[in-house]
Image (cartoon, rainbow, N blue to C red; front, side, top):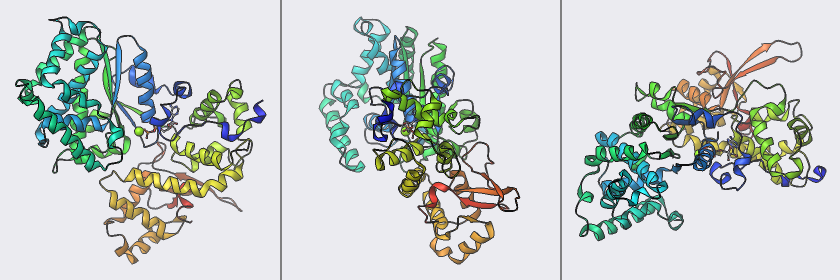
Length: 506
Ligand SMILES: Nc1ncnc2c1ncn2[C@@H]1O[C@H](COP(=O)(O)OP(=O)(O)O)[C@@H](O)[C@H]1O
Ligand SMILES: [Mg+2]
C-alpha cells in the first residue's frame, strides 16, 4: 500500500553522477525531457557544459549506455588519469612543451579513437592488408604489449597513496617496462609521437570509413593544470584541446560517420575564464555547447518544474507502489504543505543554486533524519537547514578551489561571513572592508570581489518591487540565473544567499 511507504524507502538520486550511474536501474531513473542527449548527439556540438553538480557526468554516463547499445558503435569515457598516463608513456619523463600541445592533443585523441575502433572490430584486424590490420600493427609496434596494457592500470591499488606518490608509482612502473622492452623493440618506440600523427590519422580515418563508429567522452579534466609543465597555462591547454577536438570532429564528419564524435565535459565557470585568454574561444564554444541549466520559469504547477520532474521520475521508478501515480498526486502526497508560504520546489530553489545536486542533498538529509515519516513536512527542512547550509558552503568552497583566483575568492567569502549582515549596501561593506583590510590581503579590488560573489550566487541584488504599507515586496537578481544581469548593480542592496545564511550565522 502506498500509504506505508516511508521516506527511507524513497530514492531521490545520489549527489554524485558517477555513483548513481552504477545502479542497475540508472537509465530508468534518468530524466530526458529536456532532450540534452539528442541535443548533443544529433548535432555538431561537442561540449557538455554546466555548473558543478548540474549533471554533466551523469549525462555522459547516459550517452555511454545509449551509444554502446547501437550496433557498430563504441563509446568510451576518459578522465584526466588517461591523459596523464598517455603523457607519461609518450613523453617519457620530459615535460610537454607549449608549442607541442596541439600535436599532443591530436595524438591523444587519435590513439584513443583508433584503440576504440579496434575493440569493436572482431574480424578485419586479423586479416592482413586491411586498414584495421595495419592499425593494429601500428599499435603493437609503437606500444609493445606490456606497456600498452598499463592503460588499464588498477586505480584501486593506488587509491590510498597521495597524488604525488601515485605519479611516482606510475612513473616507476612505466619506466621499468620501457627498459624491459628496449632491446626487443627498435622501431616506433624511439620515434617521437609527433612524427607519426599524420600516419595515424590516415589509418584511423580509413578504419572509420568502414562502418565503425566511436564516441569518446572526456570528463573530469578540471585538474589537469599541474600536469602540463610549469610555465604553461592551463587555459591555453584547454583552448588547444577544444580546437583539436573541433578539427578532428570535422574530419570524422567527412568520413560520413553519423554516430562518431569526441565530446568534452567542461564546467561553465572554466569556459567563462577561457575567454580571457583567447579571442577565439568565444567563437569556439558558442554554438558548440550543450548547456545544463535547470532553472525554468515555464511551470504553472510545482510538479512541472524540471527539477521536480527529475525527482519524481526517480521516486516513481524506484518505488513500485508509486509507479502508477501521476506527478501531481505524488507531489501532493510527498510535499503536502507549503514552507514559509512557498511551494516546496520554490523553497528548494531559493536554498540552492538550482542544481540537481543541491536539491538531492537537501532531500537526502531530511530522509536520513526522518526515515520513518511519510512525507516531507516543512519543519523537517528547517531542522536540516543547518547541516544543509554547511554542506552547501563546502560544495561552494570546493567549486571555487580550482579557480586560479582561489585565494581571492576565499577571502571574499570570509568578508561576507565577517560582515554579518543579511542585506547590505556598497557603502556599508566598503566601510567594513577598509577598516579591516589587513584580514583580506588577497582582495585588491572590492568591487571585483563583489562581482565574483554575485556571479557564483553568494550574494544577489534586491530592490523594492512594490511598496506596501505593512510589507514591501522585494525582487531579487542572482548572477547564476540567466534571467539576471551578468554584473551586479552597485546602487542596489545586496543580499546573502539563503542557503549560506545558516552557515554564516546570519
Ligand atoms: N538528467 C538527469 N536525470 C536524473 N538525474 C540527474 C540528471 N542530471 C543530474 N542528475 C542528478 O544530479 C546528480 C549530480 O550530477 P553529476 O553528473 O555528478 O554533476 P556534475 O558532473 O555536473 O558535477 C546526479 O547524481 C543525479 O542524481
Ligand atoms: Mg562530474
